[in-house]
Image (cartoon, rainbow, N blue to C red; front, side, top):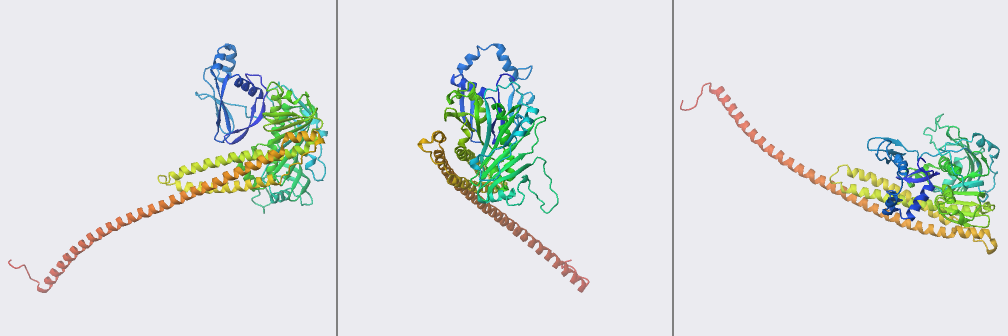
Length: 592
């Protein structure tokens, strides 16, 4: 940071229906929260067009009084950052859809680096919890390559003075998400990776070959190599994936995922951190883990998108409004040891030190519990952190919990998408009102209603997958009284209650979707009425024009007949005089 000596870490934020990785200082957020507690700033909660909460800040009268006592020297540091250099022109923030810009009214413009994520060198091995395995070979370890990260020891972190307060030993990372799945999709997925072939796995790509009868296909060199571990045709698939994506110059990343997919829709992407920068296996900094998690989130989307059917990719793009590659997921970090080892209450220090560090990997902390004397569980907005010598014994409970939390995250996105759909219907209603004055409105309305109908059909399909998954997913049985640590963790996770809440929420969403479908029917009826009215209006207009035209033709015909009669009299006279001239050769008018 140029003004404040804050650490920062990448955090996924929703900006105008797009998920963007933004470098956020949790220390700065903690200081802002302190200012709110002291009533030095005011906060206003509003809702965005994406129906996500937005927090606005304004200095209070008490805060203004305090600012008066700040020295001019301290103010000048902030002023130099916030104003155009050499002037008092305030720089304003602008978003162009991809990046933030600092710009002034005079035309100055500078791109902000707040959305530029940073890379660190690391080595990982595939990791799949044993409770998700059904036979097959074990995952391959890359521990023998851990030194490659130490040799490179390269990153592009701009802050060269990171405060590494908390470190973890023997870290396993799982990133999980929910994707609409079914038995048929699972069969297709197994076929995509060649599960039924003699030689299984290989390189995969999401590219669709438009010329299947041809001899060549153009592909990017950044492909993913997958090796099948175990599968059942209609229920699950476990595989190992090696990433071959380009990295920043000098950064070495040996990136291997363990991927576990099941027919209920839960997707687990796991890795064991063998080394991060110069640290091998142990003393892994949370600052480095935060940046590794960005890679895991982004690359896992690229990997699974290569395996999914086009139908599933379309459903994801519908829910995430075309931004499915950046969809949010749930993080789970498991470590054998944490340094310093403290009680759960000591970690929750209200932003003084440790809590800010933990926020970097699991988001805003909600609660922390001592599962045992040595095991600590921390709940965050974006995941869980479980550390201690017995942490890996709890994998079955943690995986069951992740199954329901991923659906919880997906339902939140589904619900937001419903409101966006309702906004589109309101816009369509406004276009219908202008049919009488806008000649193109009727055609545009029909196109929009077709799109809305398709979206509602797909949303209904997605909701049926979600409800089926909630019914099928099993809640682990409650441990007995003497189970000790298992019972303690089971009570903290509250998996049964989470399932009940999800069932109620999906029922509510079903009602909303039914109401939306009925509203669409009203729009269709209004369009039909408007179309019929326009047709009648056009017919009446044509009839009036035709009648007027017939009257004009009748008048014209009458004049024509009169003219013809005159011409006939003249012609008759001319003929009569010609006949007389021929017969008498001499004639004249009597009296001459």
